[in-house]
Length: 189
Image 1 (cartoon, rainbow, N blue to C red):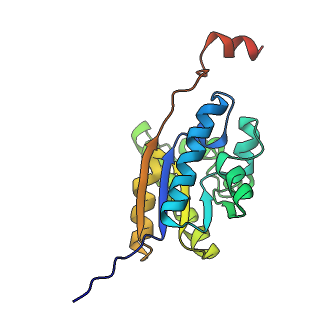
Image 2: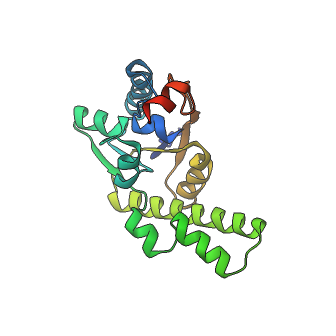
């Protein structure tokens, strides 16, 4: 009797969004460590595509034009796509921060009820990522997301029959310039 090993179709890397985006809180050497992790996982699983919990709106907010993974994808000739809701989509669904707070106030939600609503909206976004990655239909795919989403994203993909593994649940490097550092405060003035 022979056993065939089932190969993962979705490889998840959870991390912090500022690192994912290549924000200047991180040095080039720290960003290279993250890029090396992505490349190592890509090679290990022979990933053919990279998808990310990210949108162009968030990139602009972070002052960057491409994530570490997008830059790597272009260099390697791989497909790449951001799969998160855009600001326009969030506003249309009333799940942007302002719209969600207005919904919570209008509905008279307590703090605990509003927290539950926020959790559900997070799960809605995760379902959108799932559908968008499924629509791309290129396997195996490397999926980069916020660390707090990694376990649920794994669950969702496994539920629909796309074997998902978490390569790294919460990849971190210490920022060289923490957001609250005096240097950051001075530079922001």
